[in-house]
Image 1 (tube, rainbow, N blue to C red):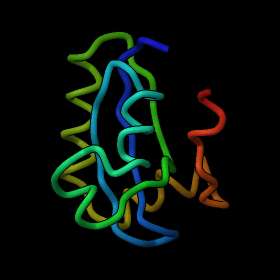
Image 2: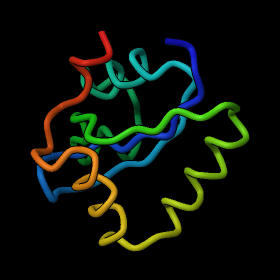
Image 3: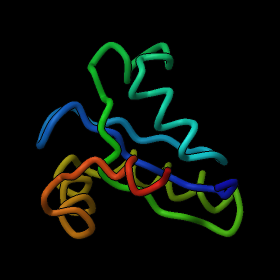
Image 4: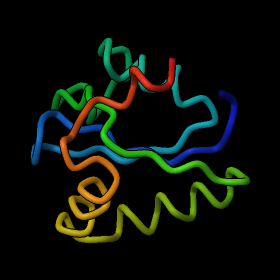
Length: 95
């Protein structure tokens, strides 16, 4: 699944959120799950893929990532709730 994506990882339902961008979502989500990504997501245990959006280009994905990061926590929660109201780990649907 090589495509430009923006995604949100969570530590738990309504927990700490990490927003990122990647060209290989299954690989990146696996790295987060296994604690292989150093930094914020590892420190706060953001291991659950709760939201993602596919884009035509990496530039579009990065632009969307910046919009999401600039938004309020409530807006991020609304994005997740609209796509994934049960906060299921979407990683399993990728592999």
